[in-house]
Image 1 (cartoon, protein in one colour):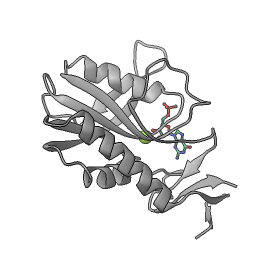
Image 2 (tube, helix red, strand yellow):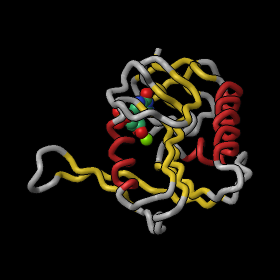
Image 3 (spheres, helix red, strand yellow):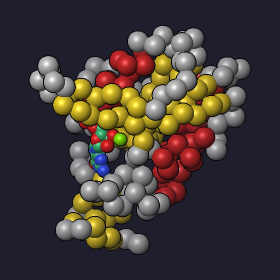
Length: 177
Ligand code: 5GP
Ligand code: MG
């Protein structure tokens, strides 16, 4: 499908499934090389990264485990703004090699928050793999270790990414038309 409609918006194909799969393969081979001879605990950030996580993990040839977490926001009683909490991390990550799997990094606020929380648990190595990265939108200094594809600052859906909950099921990635 070249064009799709979700709710009120029309989208057109931006990244084909084969382009995405090539990017996934590049990220997997970088991780396989960097952690050669070591073990890795992958931490996948739901919901958006479920497809990337599944395709990436199939190409990882290291001793690997996977844990799925969610970032939840709640209004802090005594703080301004929202405090984001990592939910579902049951593993002890201290002394372990950890690779965070994200779907997309935009301003970087979400990933910086996740990295801070995980660093506090003293992993041996902590790396970030994001399928997509919007350099024009990024506000942070932290370098992203593994990036599948850099994309312009436009709203996209598909391959795990949603518009109001819809569109995660497409194998291609679409941009708003
Ligand atoms: P950040 O905190 O880096 O600004 O935003 C990261 C989160 O915003 C992602 O995990 C994703 O949920 C959402 N996001 C950012 N850009 C897009 C986009 O183009 N499409 C969709 N569907 N979600 C996005
Ligand atoms: Mg996300």
